[in-house]
Image 1 (cartoon, rainbow, N blue to C red):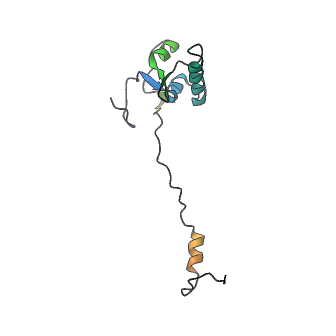
Image 2: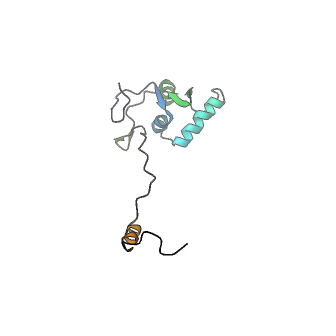
Length: 120
């Protein structure tokens, strides 16, 4: 099975991301992260069961299903539409496009004027 965007899994993964677990539990992403960190900080006494893999936090599916009392369905549906895991979008260019006002101002300068209209 692939984990590429657009691929449709029918079986949930063994370890879910915090965002996926939040969608299953129908809680917010921030609350899910807070509960997962609480679990890690309290050595499993309280919070949402989580494992740290490097710098990433993963939620074991078996603990989530045990807490829910049954198997989870996959893909996760929200208002009859599947919820896909977030995919990084390309970063927009930070170079602004030249404005029409600037282009117009440059076009009105005399062709022989290569310097500023005032002396320094």
